[in-house]
Length: 210
Image 1 (tube, one colour):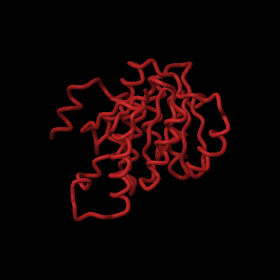
Image 2: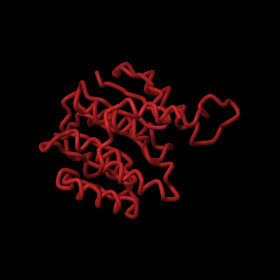
Image 3: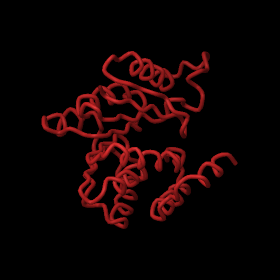
Image 4: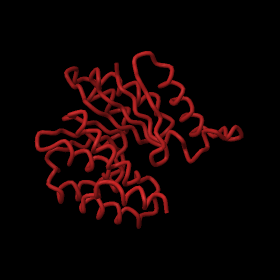
């Protein structure tokens, strides 16, 4: 399998992340989990950019947050937004087990509510890196909020931008698919970002704020 070859020729996945991924794999919603190579890419990107403050919109069972938290180091800060207490209970358990629970702040509420409320009022809050992986219909709003909150030179990552290839299916006019197409066009058209779409997982856009 091609993914096995990719993983076999990449840096090893930390054991705590392997355990979390395997537990999540037994859940009904396991397909919401990011791919392990995506987690390794995000961790490496955080190290390469010297990131210390990271925000993610959509946390699920915490794999992406944990991947980046481990890469940020002892002085790193992660702000995670999610609205599902069941999924994030798993996340919090693994964050504590990995010894990074004190570096991660979880806002358990609808993401737009948090972005426009608590985080929106923190004018001095500037993040080095942000990751969007929540309800697709709000992707464009999440991206615009992230642009406001990420520093110049910072990076915004958007997950599922290929939507299993359905972005190319002209017969698919599902609102979720259309929302992904919309954000893909939106990011490309903005003059204040440099962006590239990568064939990692289900498609990952990386945008650098100019």
